[in-house]
Length: 409
Image 1 (cartoon, rainbow, N blue to C red):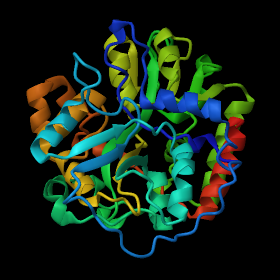
Image 2: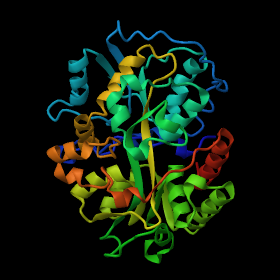
Image 3: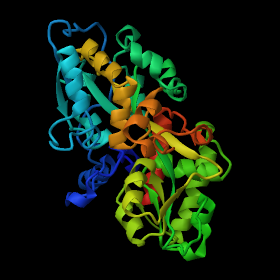
Image 4: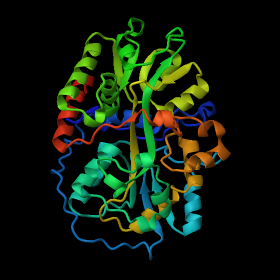
C-alpha cells in the first residue's frame, strides 16, 4: 500500500485569490487531499498495471517544426489567470502570440501517483502518452528519470532557462545538472501558528509543537512524508539529505509518541488552512504558498522558519518519453524562464520562483510579493533550506510503508 506521502502537493501555491468573491478557497494541495481521500491509498497498487520496465529505446520523431501545437498537463489552479476571464491564462496567451504554437493546456494532474498510474501503461509500452509536457513533484520526477521514461532536454532550445535557473536549483541529486527537468515552482515547508489560539506565545520549533502542553490536541502535521519527517529530523539535528534508515525510524518513533498521547490531532493536506484561521488548531506544519493568502485575511496567523531549518522541494517540468512535440515543449519551458513571465506567474501562484531576475520584475508588479521570502527567499532564508535525499526504489517502499502506518493510512 502506498502512503499518503504519495498524495503529493502539488501546487498552485496560493489560496485562490478571490476569497471575498464567494468562490471556495482552493489550492493544488487542497485538491490533492480530497483526491487522496477519494482514491484510497491502495488504488494505484490495485489497478493491475504490471511492474514498470524501461522500454523506451529508439528515437522519436519530433514533429514540432511542422506541427505548431503543444499538449501541456498541469495541476489545477497552478498558473496565472486573467482577473476578468478565468478561462484565459495570460502567460500562455503571450507564448502562443510570440511563437504561433497553440497550447492545449489541461489541468488533469490532481495527484502524483494517480497521474503516474494513468500514464504508466503507455510509458511502460514505449508509447506516446498524448502529452508533451507535464509538471510533477521532485520525488515522482526522480522515479520517471530512473525508469527512463522522460526525454533529455536540449539547452540549445532553452537559452533563458539555461541562463536564468537559480543556482540553488541547478544540481538536485536525482537530476544532476538538470538534464531532464526544470523547476516550475519551489515549495517551502515551515511552522505556522495562530497567535490568538496560542495566547500570544510564539511557536518556533518542532520540539515545542510536540511538547507544549497548551497545544495538546491542537497540532497537525502534513501527510507529506518528506515534509513532516524532514522537519522532525532537522529538529533532531539530522540532515534529511543524509538520513539513514535508523535515523528515519527514530523520527517516526518520536512523532508516534505524540500521536499516541493525542498531542497531534491529525495529519492533513492543506485543509489545515481554515482550521488554523479559526483557531480550531493552534499550530501546524504548513506550506509557504498557502500562508501568504491565509495571512491576507487572518493577520493573526504567523509563520516561523525554525533555527534548525526548513524543508524545500520542487514541482518540475518534464517531457515524457515518445512525446511528439519536444522542441515546442522546450520553447515553453524557456518562456517561463524569462524573468518578466516568471514574475507574472509568481505573483499569481505565490510559490517560490526558481528564476534569476524574477525579483526585479516582480517589484514592478507587486512590491510586497517581491519582498516576501516565502516567494523569493533572501540569503538568510535560503541558507536554512534542506531537501530530503533521493531514495532508492526499495527505500522508498520501506519509508512510505512506515509513514503510512504512522498516519493511519
